[in-house]
Image (cartoon, rainbow, N blue to C red):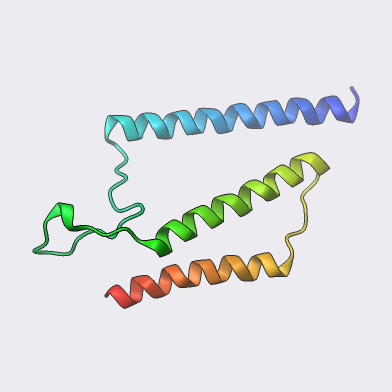
Length: 109
């Protein structure tokens, strides 16, 4: 068996596992076992109505930036057949993104 076939089979198995994991998560969301309340919006504090939550730009930015960077490096790693080194600049940007989220959480409290 040549290395190209091994990598193709490995990719198929990993993809199947990820799809099954995604299906389980989506099923739990559909059945109500996982709640998405407050994912992209701040949960209202005590004494406030449920409809008074506001969208959180820091949460949205942290979520999107993390998915974009991780998806890009996953794609590059699959193409290269090995793990790709993450440049320090990208790690700094991920740190800034996470830091803005943490600062917004502490400012709210």
